[in-house]
Image 1 (tube, one colour):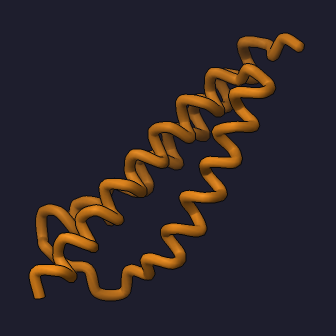
Image 2 (cartoon, one colour; image 1 turned 180 degrees about the horizontal axis):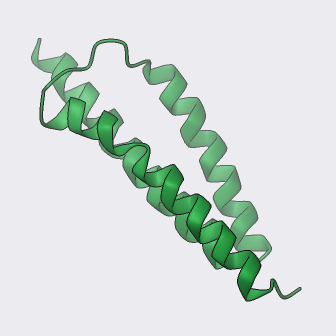
Length: 90
């Protein structure tokens, strides 16, 4: 199954927007040292969902879906690590 280039381009755009949406949260945790209101169970569930989407992207051989989910998982991991670090320091 070959995905048309224009369809992958839409996926890349959606993935890019989805990833940059996490940047304010990363900044809040890592630059400002704030973690109030961040639910680790919610982030764990989002990580599980993104992991399944990543597997799906690999199975259907979608470069856009694969890259977007790797990038989003990286952002989520950065937030989780930052929150855990801050909460342990309290």
